[in-house]
Image (cartoon, rainbow, N blue to C red; front, side, top):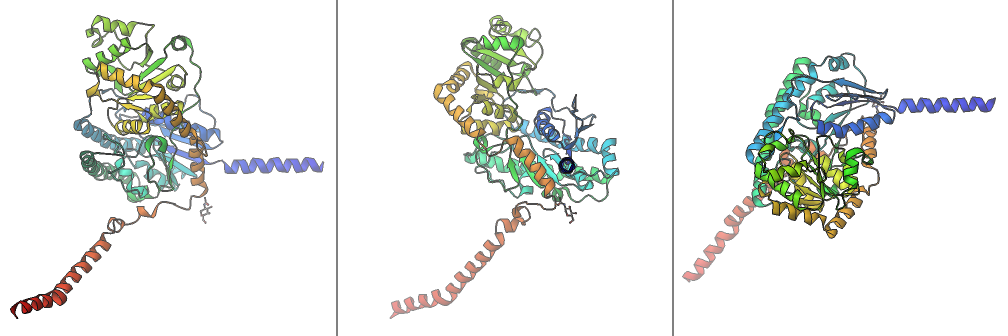
Length: 524
Ligand SMILES: *[C@@H]1O[C@H](CO)[C@@H](O)[C@H](O)[C@H]1NC(C)=O
């Protein structure tokens, strides 16, 4: 009997401690980018699986959510991020367009978020959250919300940092060895690339601080009258989970609260089935997977570039699985292709076209020998996860920096749209399929997996850590140092003054008599 009582008490204590360690977590994703959300969704579901109570503000509700996962669904006239972008070579115009797009959506996303009734209710009811996950992308609007809820913030990104994110964590962006989000080049830039980085860094920051952040602040002020400057709230972010890892993006100089969790979204590859499974299994020389992501329409590709890819497919012995994000092939512009090239697209034994492909299962399949990709961060980390070499054709945004990382890490090679010819593409694909190259990729993949804690567990750990230690902000002191002190300009100024005084004193006291002495000597 006494044993039973003891057991009951034990069970009760366990239940109590379990439920008390379950956290109430809010996550705010006001940007409607699907490629971003499919990454963080894995973390959010994992947090729910661990027993935490998770509330998610996003454009992407779960179909069958677990009991402790609640959606607040945003909807509105926001520009869909997945609108068709055209495939064109890198140029400054597209960088400027991207900057306008980010500014515009950064403003709009904030208005849609704050005008949502359920979101307003969270604040009205003073709902208590232990931690708030906030996407670090094109707006800081959600930081105002977290402030009203009086909860500590974990920043989340799904790509390398945006130019305006470095300062708030006390990282000084250094163009001499750090890739820039929107430009070509890696850790060894040319002088021209460094100039480019400095100019665009200033441009993007000014646009962000002057337009986006100020507009977010004004929209917040319409609803709440006590929101501190957003940049101050940004410096109060407890930690940042970044979607990168040094094996791919090289060792960065990050403070202790900026945590690399790249690849946490990659799930176990399942066997392929149906038509696709059969197509891949029967590929004697292996399969090459082609995908330019969800945003780029293949029909916008210049005709000669499309022909180069089709001629490459015809020439290589491999089969091709192509994420066909486009109109059907019996519509223009594909009807304008030469008939022998069009017949490649319709050859069911050579090419498998589909808008919906299980990318992870494909990259994880042993028959997949190479990936021809636009170098989005998701696909790039998935390739590294499964050790599939990449031929990267970056088009815009972070893809350009990712492409440089792919090449520098040894995961693959880059080819730019301008240089895309049949000869170059065949050369690039053959290059990454060489046994030596593939062995290096296998070794790199081994290093990528070799971590003290899996990336998903690391992301969960730091989320829980933030809730457990919410009364501290362990940011680098560098984030609080005024710029003139950060660069020791005042110290340099004092040294310049001392130097000038010394020279002057020397001129007056020492040099002049000497001069006189020598002239005297001459005279005598
Ligand atoms: C933060 O400090 C307050 C006041 O001392 C305390 O009640 C609270 O439990 C602390 N929070 C955490 C997460 O330790």
